[in-house]
Image 1 (cartoon, rainbow, N blue to C red):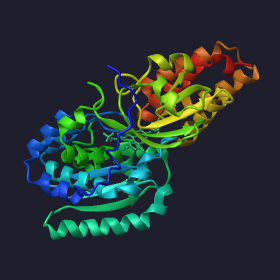
Image 2 (image 1 turned 30 degrees about the horizontal axis):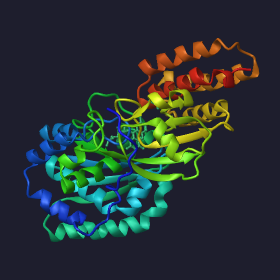
Image 3 (image 1 turned 30 degrees about the vertical axis):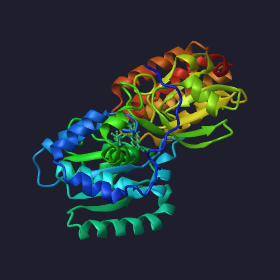
Image 4 (image 1 turned 45 degrees about the vertical axis):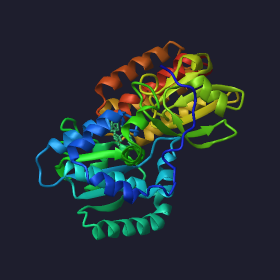
Length: 388
Ligand SMILES: Cc1cc2nc3c(=O)[nH]c(=O)nc-3n(C[C@H](O)[C@H](O)[C@H](O)COP(=O)(O)O)c2cc1C
Ligand code: SF4
């Protein structure tokens, strides 16, 4: 059931009725099993893109027997068009920290790490001071958990969870084979919960407001709200927290410039939705899921150029470990260039679509597997802009 577009204020809400540390104290009085049940009941799904149920992730990690476990906050935020995690870390970092500590308590971890992209290092000075104060506040309350920072070096692939672990371990950031999944063998080969920045804040806020209240927002498959990074041809670019399940046409009415011809939902690796499909598209896990990037294009934009930019990005950022992705990204890029120059017939685009199908099956990680999302949606809906 779709919802009307509704702005909400949960993530950035800063009323002094309840501080993050008070939420922490209150929650740590409950049993880990009770907390997990609440989180599962809330229906919260990961906000990093894949949408895995957060309560289950915590439960699987809790069920592992290991002396050492970790909690990792994924603040790599490399998806083009996404800038909400930066804002969250800058404005409400304590809510992120508290989510990590509650997670540590639930799964039995004593260390947490925030892996933040190197491009955000300008935030580091302020964040480290707040983190130092927070770690001290934990020690004062005899809470045995410490949070550390690690900086990435600007590779998009290091946002993929297993590549992120490799990077944290001082190795080249390349995805691992799965299984084993991080809940079993993550950072340093130990059971690890890895969650997106925004997911962790929602856990804090669910323990503050209660699962029932959170569930009132959104739809059956997409509970709650989400922070969106809105960019492109819009007079009001920025960060907005919206209820999940809204139809895309309402989003466009609110944020477009009156001449919107397409919205790229979910960043470069997401889907491009043309104007004729705005009415039928729901933003949520039952429709088009998104890590939060909404790029709006008006009729002045060349969708060939948009696709070309995305393919250049993937060609550059492919880690090169597996052939379908390393070679596939290059061939897709060269392929549309050849079609645009008239050196290949328009039907060559259909051969390239078959290549994306192969990449979806054969590429080792989400980067290569999802290149077909922008490729097919742009080629199918804007074919006349790609051909000679
Ligand atoms: C190429 C690639 C890049 C990714 N980048 C990010 C990222 O920057 N931030 C993020 O939270 N998740 C990213 N992910 C998803 C993570 O692998 C992982 O699913 C996520 O951190 C889990 O957190 P969640 O359950 O809270 O969503 C990326 C995945 C892929 C395949
Ligand atoms: S799909 Fe691409 S990014 Fe992922 S492992 Fe293969 S080459 Fe690396």
